[in-house]
Image (cartoon, rainbow, N blue to C red):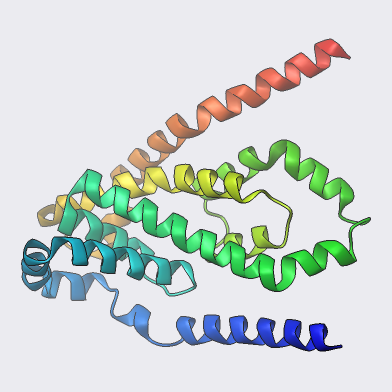
Length: 231
């Protein structure tokens, strides 16, 4: 009974924290207009306090992964303030750290309990996930049909290994990180948020995503062909 009460309280606390973050209004500050308005001040701050600026940027990105809107603008800001490759690295660190945090919170609060309670029903699902986890996760990350934070929480309910979740997240966010930090480094050519989803940038994102995704897809195709031959 005491364990059940703790479990319920943990769920409520995590849910409350997510709701507070989501509707706190923090996302209203992560806008393209605010970024352009305070650009000079932000650049001066980065120049004067580079290490602290990097740390704060990564922490801000972690918050966006826990349901605070503004990841696209923040990625653009990474390129604007730190240039393309350093900015992309900081984005990947922040996004992966935030994703892992959401994953572990969900697993600790709900995932282990869910797996224990429905072990028999989830047996086949867990086996299928174990065989194709990397391909599934890379697909979801590279083709973001579901919100980033939702994928983190849903994966926490499964028996997906933390190591697999971590590296697929890092690789999966790489294309968008590169494309949008590059756009940020060319801020003079960006006049509005709509320019961040222009056909040219989307095409670049698609090309990099295919480049990242193709080796894993080819590996799976070869494995299936090998399996058919053995049968």
